[in-house]
Image 1 (spheres, helix red, strand yellow):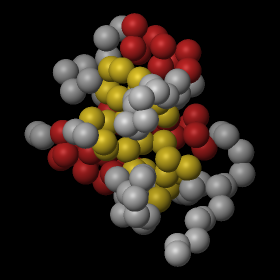
Image 2: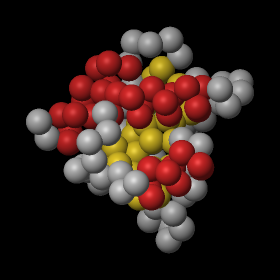
Image 3: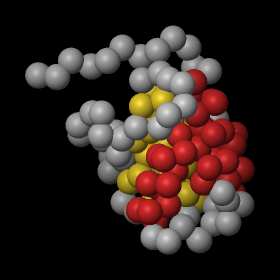
Image 4: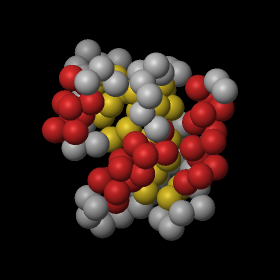
Length: 116
């Protein structure tokens, strides 16, 4: 199974959960992302699963060799975002669930952005 197919499988598993929006609902950054209550929790970028997790959890996963901090091409790795190494044995569904729970607990829904 390719990485693209793995992400599509992940989307299939999460898209019908309450408050989850599948990829394609927006354009630009985050267009390939799963959102909970308007906030991105998992996305597919440059062939890698990228998830938002608490900084200490990302630190542990990076130290364990499961990935690297995500850099959105701005030169600064993001503290709460992990780009999962394709060779990592971590189960994507578990990481995405953990990310969804973390992001979903962040407060009220994020308002939708107006398109220009």
